[in-house]
Length: 292
Image (cartoon, rainbow, N blue to C red; front, side, top):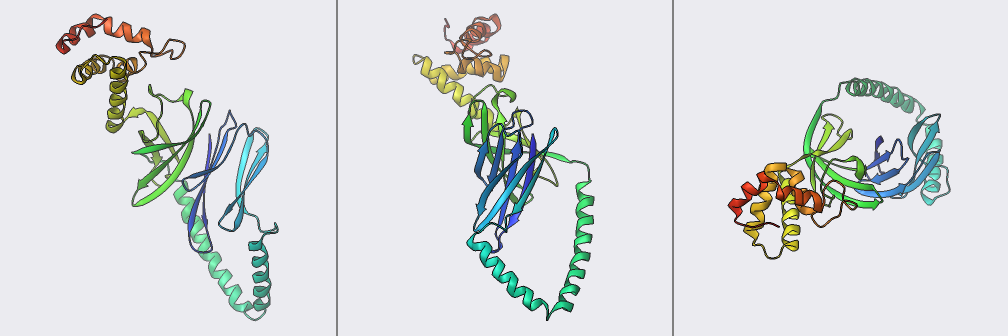
């Protein structure tokens, strides 16, 4: 999946983060501004341009197909007829007239700026050429939009005193979690120490907080389907299931009212198989509950 990130600095000094995700095989594309998803397009397999405003500035992201690959670019459209561009052109004319009188100072400024730019470019190039140093930190996800098996997620990463907002497109069939995704779920984010925009959510590693959320979901569902049980008894049985099968055991209880067609991995058959196994029955004796 292609992932790009740009920072736009407005005239008033405010910074905006512009990001793009583009699926390699599906062609699904998402563009976000700070924490807000502003464009979602599906099956983008050819050259295409997307336009949007940041304050009064008309911005464009170009998706250009080159053979079997795509190239991406972010630019400000200064040619289209907008009030902001007309105002800009008037200022440019005034500045051009002033340039005749301050030419020497202007060229000196360009020379100094070029030297600073070259030094900054060399420093940035050295930094970007450094090997990845991946670290992990838990983040809470927010489901922005879902269409079929594709979900648009947004999350905020707070690291080294800075807060950065990112978004990702996720294929539900490709993530390793036995429970449905919900806003507020917490997972570990793997990201580069120096380039946090290079990141990926690791759905396979469950945080302690998320484990608690999964336990509560399984408990609520189990008690809803078995109203004759006391909460303490239900918690005891879930602990036995978790001890024997981990998250899969909790999922068997959560999906116990689903058929194999609805949920192939966890369903009423896997639930019955679990609670009728000898190891489960032996441990469930401590819960003092007969199971059917």
